[in-house]
Length: 584
Image (cartoon, rainbow, N blue to C red; front, side, top):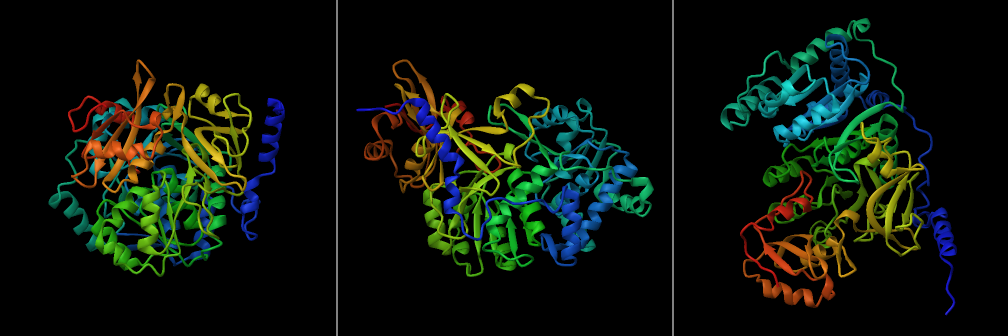
């Protein structure tokens, strides 16, 4: 049988990507590129958006609404405080450490208007994790929620932070509600541990002082800011593992919010949407999608401080009647378990988007059955600011895929030799576009590993159909090789989750003398009657022999990140812990 030379095959594959097959699946109303940006920086976008939408609701939390005009004014005052009172300079790093409260958009917009670089810190960080981020970033200032100030006290002396601003949950609520809320959080619920920090400034005092500086512009003159200037140091495990910060510029953020909005505009209307922001704004997905894109679209973002409080979240949904839901797959599954959620009227919902992690097929199906709407899945990573692709808004989504590349985004799937693979074949997902980061902070070698000739090598293995739909196969680093055969953990997890008695699943590979590696499954039962034998019998009908778990361990819960991803590296630590299940 004649064969096609490898170089010819590579050339054919290259030509396939150059023709951008996904464009054939685009709506006629969706342009292939986003065109020139209206605004060069986030500060310009904020000011321009607020002038346009004025007194319309921009953000709300705990029943209190901030208008676009108020967001602009408050962020102006915070910027003036940072520059005029603290004397900070362009490029100085400021840490923001808080959940979804009204202070976050005010602070992030103010810091970016001032030319500072924002370092988002997860409030759930341990003191050790905080120290690592603060020291690595060289931050000189921090705005922290009082609930976490005790951890800051433990590490502050080891960092370069010299300005500490402390805020409380209710600081931007009306006076009486503010006093009551802060009292309940601190005194009744005991959620604010004591700390011995001295020389701090309250957020409210900072804004008030900034207002005075703002009225005397010469004392808080803003620096000149360009699109190529750094806006964020966004910490991530990265495509190469290990903690590092992606350098995200103003231009990256401006581009990605426009790219993300392009397909959304086909279903939504400027200035008419109410959006649930259930992911934390310190996460790059919600920051770009909620805090920037839907904000720029004149939408009302409803900030959810604690999405795990299902009853409260359902109450918020009832009151606000949102048209757009932005959440993660695990939160969707949790809501589906609540009868009160299923009883809601979903007729006003236009769009449900799940970000931050892959959507389980069973969850997507159950969501449609319960709400009458599809749960759109996309794909992104911090290094791409973060959105790369999304399922179409103009037609039925292709469940199990991450959809089509966004406008102005190029994709190639490459083999081990770095050459493009043929459509339909698995290869490393590589991304090129205006949303791609400029590198990792102070990490030249890891930067060079993932940025090559303008392309971002994501470390994810994917396939692409003839019409451009992308399916993630798995992370390269999570690949399990059993006797020379590749096993992708996500495939085994998906099959396990399709069993009606399995609530959650996580898969890892462990060394094995005979086969190199074997597959280990950690499972959470949805039904206590589930047995190991029953699950093994099920796998025999669903998976090839080399893919079947040789060890099944039942646990009450699985370790997850703040956005609900199963942490496979943490699963390895559970191997020797006592629990139900054994090796085959």
